[in-house]
Amino acid sequence: MEELTKYFRKGKNIIKAVDHITYKISDGIAFGILGPSGHGKTTLLRLIAGLEIPTDGYVYFNDELMSEPGRIVIEPERRNIAMVFQNWALYPNMTVYDNIAFPLKMAKMSKHEIDKRVREIAEELELTRVLNHYPKELSGGQMQRTALARALVKNPKILLLDEPFSNLDAALRDSARALVRRIQRERKLTTIIVSHDPADIFSIADAAGVIINGKFAQIGSPTDIYNTPATTLIAALSGDINLLSAKVVEDTALIANLRIPLVKGLINDNEVIIGLRPDEMKILIEQQDIHGFVNVGKIRVKVSSYTLGVFRIVVSPISDESVNIIVVSDEPIEPGREAHLLIKPDKMKIFNKE
Ligand code: ADP
Ligand code: MG
Image 1: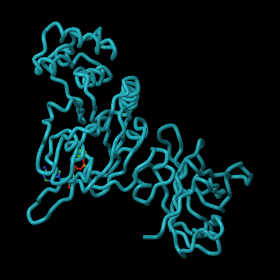
Image 2: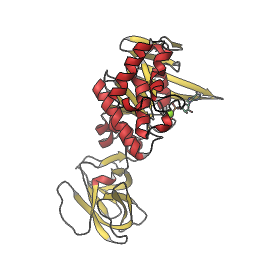
Image 3: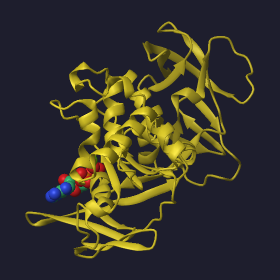
Image 4: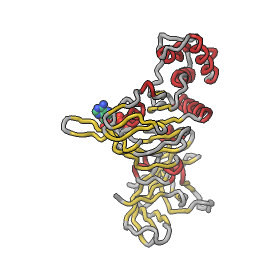
């Protein structure tokens, strides 16, 4: 992508859906694009697929020009790509076999070649036993595998996934992510996945970009983005985080009675935002030292709730009940209790107050 740009006109306004993006995605990797809704993810994928004409800029596959300003150079059908959208929709009146064969029939391939390819991919995706079944007779997992088989049967060079898991229920979502990751790794298939859900990106991508207002706001490994987000917005997009206003006094950040030690001389601002992820803190009833953590002061437990195998505890500094901090804990803690809050200083994020 070179200066790749797409503007839409909306009445008198111009929407900069994709705004001068220059980036090279390496062959064979899974690249993730994380971003809030309406920030240009789908438009960028459609530009890559050749379904949108660039307002400006270029798309290349290797050194071959695909799109240029105002013109599609290579039509989408000739780009050797596969795209999977949210619904993984299958044709309900066709068997699994015919669903998978469909793109090959469209390409006017011989019956013999179609049969060979369908059986190969069915084997790879464990669909051989259900080839004669109709979609309504399939489990959720089999449906996804059929949709993926149909996307891959033409041996595309690039797989484009647009929020592919957002309509699946939680259990299926995990297996779908694992499946896409396995196939991507086994085939070294260049894959671009866009989503607003960091779990989709982090479970599949080798590298990722965060798109905000049609531009990459940060590019790096998923771990980089999660651990060292460049802004509070990226911090919040990439996972649960407490963003807390703090006053800085002599190398200590103060959040009510909580005192967070800072590296000496690092912060000159009087006020900062401290970012603390819920699973990078601990609540202790009895004071004790735990390696890697520092005790930042006393809190009171307000609410304790159970989700996804862990307890989410809402606490407040004892001197200010209006500040809420969410902490993940293995055990429930009774509301009203006073306790100590421990944080991992090396995981703490510090942002300028905007
Ligand atoms: P995302 O996939 O991140 O939710 P989109 O790429 O769909 O974002 O949209 C980015 C912006 O471009 C939005 O403001 C959207 O309304 C606008 N947009 C997308 N497609 C069109 C279109 N065909 N015509 C006009 N505006 C569009
Ligand atoms: Mg979209």
